Amino acid sequence: MIDYGLDLSAVPRERALQDLVAEGDELDALVSTEPDWSRPTPAGGWTIAHQLAHLAAADANVLTAIRTPEAFDVVPKDADLDAAAGAAEPRPELLERWRGGRAELADALGDVPLDHTFPWFGSRATAVLMVPLRLMETWAHGQDVFDALGVVHRPTGRLRHVAALGVAGRELSFYAAQSPMPGEPFRVELTGPGGELWTWGPEDAAQRVRGSALDFCLRVTHRRSRAETGLTAVGEDADEWLDIARVFL
Image (cartoon, rainbow, N blue to C red):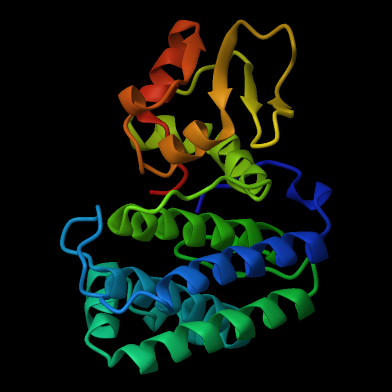
């Protein structure tokens, strides 16, 4: 995991945890009334059940990292296998496992000291970073489910957590694309769901990205191509960033 380098502590942990819980509850409300979890989602080979099984497995992995860090090295790292195994469970069992796991994780992330680090796939993480990371993944995989069901996934202020990770993931984007990291500062200006402006970076930066927060979040989580968004860039480096933007490896 890259060092995202943002002051994510600017959002109180209690508030961030409330947003994480709300994100899971929104997806829960959608899938609990859907009788057919075998519907395919935009992720190749993954059904709704695969998406929920993946979220449940990832939550369990974080709990392992926090509670028994010495056992984290043997945590399975093949997301497809985890998802397939969970998708084969009876629907009530998978739903209950996902619900119980995310509630348990929220409690654990609320209890762990803010400065306590734990292993996370080749690096270290803290609760301050993990809370928005879990929210981001819940939102992104939830988007796949909303798309599969043809339901509009209405944006909320919780997207600010995802957008902040996306902005901080610029270094990760260039690293993954094997492109030189630009030295110039970037300015990001996003319009939030309520019409508010969310900004990062110096006002006079030559490299600039503008657009809706929803489009930016869909882009950095690879739920939409750049062409499917209304994002705009000023500057060669900013333009390249929108082509390669990502928030996870």
